[in-house]
Image (cartoon, rainbow, N blue to C red):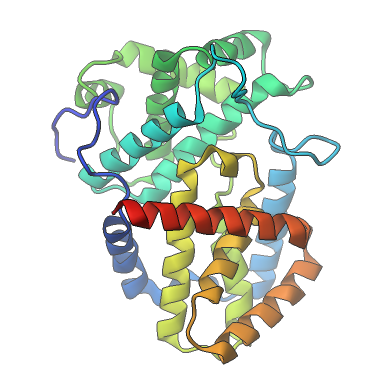
Length: 311
């Protein structure tokens, strides 16, 4: 892992998650694995997908009434903003690109950040009172939000990568904006707040499970599958930038990404086959209503368009 200072305070100098950079990363994976990145055992995949849905149903983004909630309040000028969060996402993507780590590590890190901060909105959350106090402090302190994000990335690297980065090395790479001791202390608080559940399913993982159920039953060329997987991956990773998608179920974001990718296909026949089987899958699992998925589809497509216009 190469060195070099990368303070979260500094802008990544046009190293945001451009489509060229992200698609280049994803294409290397998809070209080598193609549909091999999908699981062939559909019974096992169905069981895994069911478990993923059960886990996301337990996440604090969804109240018992089924309404979606968020941890930010735009009307409160003392709180951190969605833009503060977005800048840290940009820095995280720049960091993993520089270190040649997986984009999915950023997705996992921000998932932990979002879930930790959501605990302040759930009255019956299992998190200790001390954890809630820290979480509420973070919501009003950009520096503490920065520390939480760096720490979540530190944990995500441990969980997702084959290489390890010590807290001291990470602090050095972040130009000592936060010390190794501060990162380690926040790590304990983060894991306690998450009840040590640091490996929740991401939208990308849910998406691959859904596509694994579809693949054996549709007549679509390998090249088309590569593009479908690539575009779905791209969309789920770009979605991390926008706070709105953190308030949605991961399966909803995954389905939105898949449907949008299908809509971009040139072959109407392939579109019809994929949509038909997706509809069957949606009937067999506890997904969101079609109206909610369509709303997320529209917002995701708008985000992708804005992102591409910037680059």
